[in-house]
Length: 251
Image 1 (cartoon, helix red, strand yellow):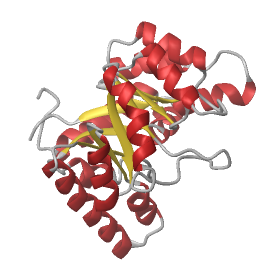
Image 2 (cartoon, one colour):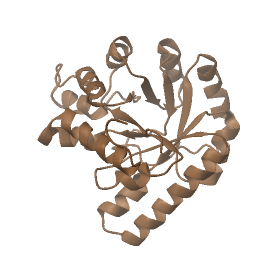
Image 3 (tube, one colour):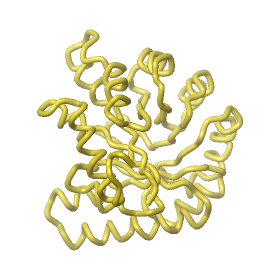
Image 4 (spheres, helix red, strand yellow):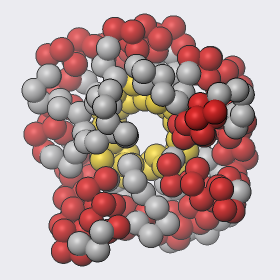
């Protein structure tokens, strides 16, 4: 099976920095370490309230990264302007609510199809690869396809939550939905990514889906970095992903 890309989300390095203020720990340094550790790309979510990643972080990342930047953002005029100014490799449109701790679900594309189509058109014209973060739901996948997104990212949170809480039947049900929708989206010609809540314990079943070409993982890796260091934490995730594909590190 083909190499599965790993995008490392550095948001929560910035969360730790912002808890105290100042310049450390530096998410840009974390991004460079992630590149060295085997990440195929870096993901950063610039939220409207700037609770973690800052505008200055995005500017610095665009200046120093050797690997592609996946810029996560809400569908707002402010974020569109920032994306058009920087022109990152990829733009992932995500739902965003001020009161949430983290992204709670997929984007409601079917209900906002017309406005989202107009929103992403300039991003595509600027050369950004547009991804839509959605639940494993055929309605949302169909809508993402119709509006011209090149990529969908399947929200794996429900599967990971069910695993963490020991709800094994529900875990298998959610995993089945993800498997079916990865195949369905691939059949429409969409590139399929997945992410949210993935850990060492949950990554391999998703990594084994042949249609999935990229996983985006952040919070768990930043947490593991406290105990084992960022480079070893990422290397272990890379090892597990490769093993799920039947690959060795050399491949």
